[in-house]
Length: 435
Length: 145
Image 1: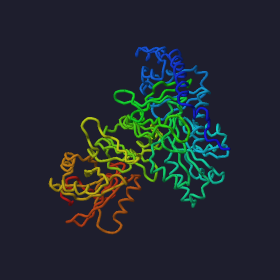
Image 2 (image 1 turned 60 degrees about the vertical axis):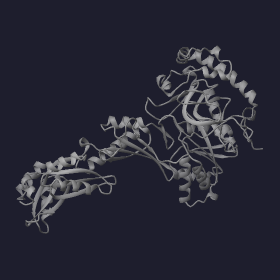
Image 3 (image 1 turned 30 degrees about the vertical axis):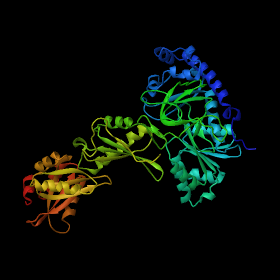
Image 4 (image 1 turned 90 degrees about the vertical axis):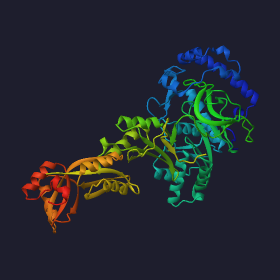
């Protein structure tokens, strides 16, 4: 018989028992982190809190928040909660050293993460009978590794495709009869179009479900993907800092994503005051790793804006749900699944001698994110030769690709054509309609 | 014997050229020849004017990015084969042409070709030795040799 839950005892645990389990794990984790990580000890000492102060789940508010700036200060080894010799893997986000996150994993951490992905797959109706095409990028990015591991835990046949090479993706999908697709929503939409161009109708495609995440998408896009591929599309949430995809996932009800509450404690706060908000209110998601070993973040500010929903779910899972993130508290853009900060683009421009007058335009054309950077021409860089100017554009495109990991289209524009503003410049125009 | 050419950066959008030429007209600058090179994003307007410095000042004051560069302006009889002769002369001397455009003067029998070349001085010497007349900056002002 097909499993509805990967770990029924955990996923459908009694709420009170879950709270007891979380409390025990939290107490143990705080003590461990305080003793093992000098960085945390300093932070907790500064906040005047010791492990003995943490007796209930509510006591978590006594702990200081951990921010991305803390991760930067502690880069690369400062937050290690386990001996480096016990670590077996790193995963990382894209970006410059300042923006890059390098997360460490012990074997137990990997198992925990993959198990979360296995829960997500099972919730999407996946079983050992399925053929899972993992078209997330493999490598430092957590997408490929996470779903790959989850697919193994479920016992499904795994096609480790990684991203790109659409022709080959289609061949494997059709020849091997892939029933489940895991990738970014924009790539799923793109594959849908490519399949149609190859003459395949939705009913010819063997897929029945897809698990899509790592970038913002909308309900409209979900319906389009579902129609194009003839599948049911499920949302998945995660971040490298906490583990990767699978921190939260959708069940068949598709009304919010269940957080893996036995591993991660979720709070929503007012991003300005830091005050914890009651369930149902919109704010910044803060996550605490209850039993991770190598990278045990406590009260990490994710910068994702969401709402927590503790109401019971008809699927039977008792773990509370979060809404699909509705935005960010910082200026990070997610473009084709890659995290991009406007400051990275600015760094490249300034290093190459361009003026700080630029405009970043993000759009979604035919389901694929586009990134355009308009840069103002100056007297110093102008030439009467077209070749000189197109070479400038090409050099800037290369430098941006090296920095961001994705291709941006560079346009030289007339001086003063980028709008100047008082105070904080509005440099980013995001035309994608996602909410 | 080079002539000063004014190049202006222009975005590829409606009205860009109108605005520039209007400004030059109001400043009393007369355009002798022009060429527009463009890509999908932008264009470069190159022009020979009777007063390139003034033209440059006017456009710079209005926020345009301009550049003044020397180009060769070679005289040729207004008849078939004349341009080929000039190009062949330069090619034999190993001088590369970056871009070129031509114009006809109103009150002269001759046509002129504007040449942006890899080596301006060598091109002048080569063409003069081949008996090709070159327009001077002063002559360009009046549009006749």
